[in-house]
Length: 154
Image (cartoon, rainbow, N blue to C red; front, side, top):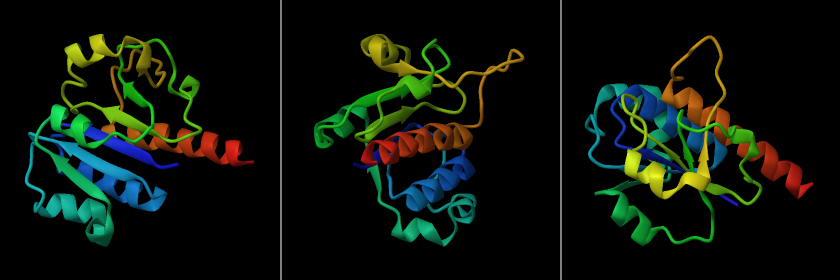
C-alpha cells in the first residue's frame, strides 16, 4: 500500500523539495494544499528536490475540501502535531496511509485537529524542544510506516 504525504500550506521551498525527494525515493505520493508560501518554479525547491521532481507523483489542491473530495482511497488519515500525546509509532501504518503535516510556522489548523482528535500523533521530543524540521518529521513518520508495512508483508 502507498503512503500519501499531505503538506498543508507549506512555507519553505527547501523543505518541500526535500520531502519531494523523500516521496520519490519511497514511492510515496505528495499532496500540496494551497496556499503555498512559494512558487513551484523556485530554484530552492528544484535544488532540494534535485532532478527527481519531474518524476515525482505530486498533486496540488486548491484547498483541503477539494483534496478530500478527490482522495477517496480506503486508507486511514493520520494527523501529525505537537498537540498530541500519542507517539507516531503507535499509528497503525501497515496498510499505508494519508499522513498530514502542517505549516512550518503554525502546524495544522486547530479546527482540523478538533475534528480528528482520535487520529492525532506526535513525534516525542525532549529538552523542551518545540518542534522539528518539517522534512525531518516527514522522514521519521514515513519510514516508520515503511517499517511497519514491510514487517507486515513478512
